[in-house]
Length: 399
Image 1: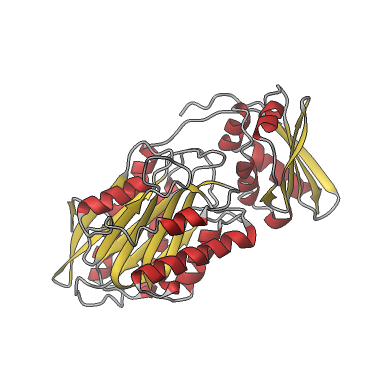
Image 2: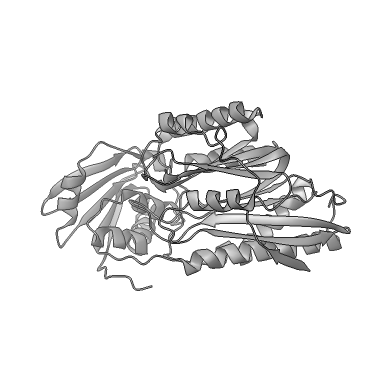
């Protein structure tokens, strides 16, 4: 059995947290957080199934599956670093390098996560200038963990954290976590980020299996708005400082660890669902350049059934990231880095993205186009000559 205790990511031995205000998107509030372990950790992770994956997802997945130990996680709130091309990946590397130098750890032991606006590049000069690893905010108190959980909030109305103690092999072990996620983020979709820390000694293979199995009944069972984000990430770090006999097989200790982990993930998932944000909208979607008619239909239907996409159009906002995101989870194959997207109506036509990356467009003109009673989004996936259209009347979404 486990015991629920106060705290979050700093509840377990050896874990510290930091937070700072870098002015990435928000003003006069912390918008960056760091989780740091005094010793290297075994890391496990699960990531978005969306075909369109943000740069931090690609970075973390490579690090976690590559077998490298992890020792720090840097999180920013405000910019998703999704659909940002090579530059976005370079920013992940820059962030890792800056944190590694500040903490005197290996670059490949730094994981990164982002949440916020899709298509915008990170303001690296602000991030590097306000590296949370340098400041007095870095600490192992429960308050440091709480403040870090507040720093990663976007449209969340409250911070989300939880911690438990469980006895493994006669030794007290702690598991703690924090997350963010509630609803839409201008101009795109909800992002679910969850970070879990433990001082348990457990093999990397069993750590990953425990997490992969548990998300099926926790995070994957909640829905706020029906959209699968480009940035969804769950990271689990274990530093072994509790000193329990290392879990290397599926024995009673493993079962107890999984039960405690389930409580953490289930509680965080419920906190996100309970903080859900409502939204609403209306439009037609045309898919061009498809290989087959069926492929075009699947993509078009996926977009018009997305609650967040309809909400964006209803609000006259050029939230093009939601369209690309909905295409990504449709099940139809396409190359997101080849997509061109346009909005058109009686007020005119405008290209929004080219080859999967945002072009320089006028927000004012986009709002004018989207304010018409009939709006069309045209996506050219450049794979063939087939096309299809789907339409939907969108209404305010009541949660």
